[in-house]
Length: 110
Image (cartoon, rainbow, N blue to C red; front, side, top):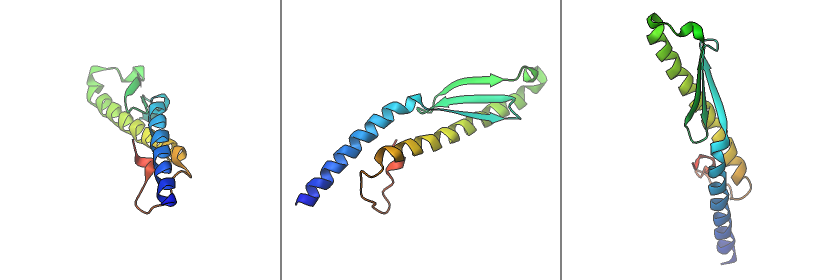
């Protein structure tokens, strides 16, 4: 019975730590860059786009479709990069708190 209580306490601790870490994710930032830096997108841990930088040489009506493609590519790259940071932060937050249970990945709890 003591082991179950101990495990339940650890689950509660992990839940609190996960909630606290999730609240901090908004402060994480990641950048995605494509076209040799011609388009950059910055996102946060809430997976929101914060800023888009476009090289002035791209702002031309005839390059509009290419610019759209570059923005989409940079945004997707930034979101991939923030996913990595989120997983690292969540894994660090729960490290050593829970027993290693196969199939239970607490790093993905966002």
